[in-house]
Amino acid sequence: MNSTQQLTVSALAWNGNCLKVLDQRQLPEHIIYDEYTDAKRVAEAIRSMRVRGAPAIGIAAAYAVVLSAKQHYAQTNSAWQKQIAEDIELLAQSRPTAVNLFWALDLMQKAIAQQTGNPISALQTLAEKIHADDIAANHTMGELGADIIGNTKGIMTHCNAGALATGGYGTALGVIRSVYQRGSTKIYAGETRPWLQGARLTVWELAQDAIPATLIADSAAAWLMASGAIEWIVVGADRIAANGDVANKIGTYSLAVLARQHGVKMMVVAPTSTLDGSIANGAEIKIEQRLQSELLPSCYNVENALVDAWNPVFDVTPAHLISAIVTERGVVLNPDKDGVRSLL
Image (cartoon, rainbow, N blue to C red; front, side, top):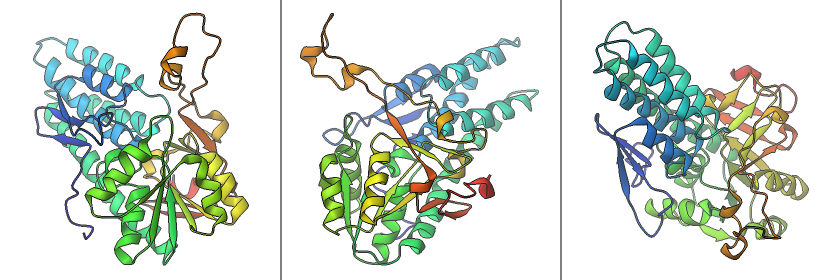
């Protein structure tokens, strides 16, 4: 498959009247697209992880604002602006860590502020541009990352940072796709507990494009590195601080520590919408905590149980453990000195 071909899988589809969302909780057993015509239900789709991945969350939120305008503008007074603002606030509360969500909502709010009449056409054009720009950025990042990696015997990825997590092609998986197109390489994916995005999504997505992949238990990563089977770990990101610290799926930090121990390089791939210049370092990133019921066996999900769970969805990898941060605007190597400020 060349980089211009349509991918088999898409997380989001917009037809001008509704947003179709692939329910990723059902994969890989069931491929089910749900249709959404209002912002409140899109916010719930984001919160419940039907749609996930920082870029895809931002794109879905942008389309949700369009749906909000379609729903509320028909009113003859100024109440539509207040109602859209309420929907935007609801969307902002759906997932706290992915900065792409707030970036997209900010763009949509600015567009609303510039409208004196019917805002629907302008908002739809902007949302479609956000979506198209993300796909184009992914292809650019794929080639830039592949240029850095070159020929390699093995790559490992964590969670899912592919077409399912973006507008299409993927960030980390975009790089892996581009590397694979240039020559054979072994691809490994960690299972990514507790939601198993690697096991349910990443290896399935790669298989849709006839790209072979090997699934490993998360706890096998250190032994895989010690075996010499991989030279790179390639992951996405949900927020990148100005100094280059990276928030990504829980388990990324431990992989980075292991990679440093074993001489394996660590690449983070994310669009510039993931860069947050308003925070100096990773200590300022709000880490989402999800329900302990997502982690606990059902027998412990009872009142007065003696066993509870700590369930952070993300962790923060310090910049000094990262070999390269790849964006559509360029690459920062060894970002521990100047961070990503040159890209902001």
